[in-house]
Length: 187
Image (cartoon, rainbow, N blue to C red; front, side, top):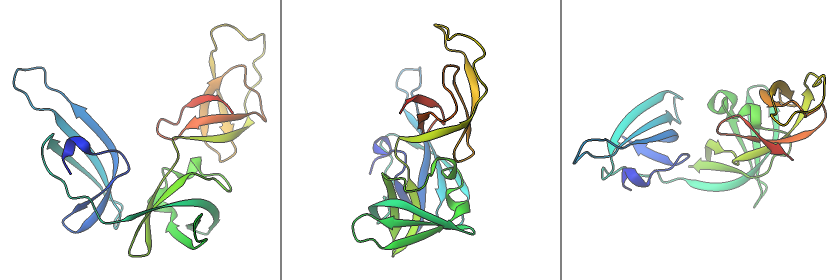
């Protein structure tokens, strides 16, 4: 696959080791005849180390041979998170360290998760673009809602802290973007 076709969440084979694309950024030069460069941040799915690479748009990268499967979060036991296939109900476990950036967005029975599986091992997960979470604590607005919604801190049911508009109250369900970690809308 060419570098200009890469997307976040794809798994690339680098020297026989699967690497997950965490971040992808295209830089177009301002000079004549310049070539668009793509900066990619990978996570090595075996060692969890980060790797930064840069490619020209027509450079070729090898996509890893892995299976994508829809799963649902089941439970956590010690340092392992378990996911269940929505097709055949088989269970897959993954070390919490491997998905530590995703844990604040994982709620009980969360659907829409894509598992990346190679040789019957769960290598990583892709969360849906947005997840619904409940506000468990946030200060009261202390006045009437204004046309310009000032943000205030809120703690969600997984412990994640984000900024929300001041009109929201404890107990409300909201949508949160899993890429940016920001409030999207009421659920």
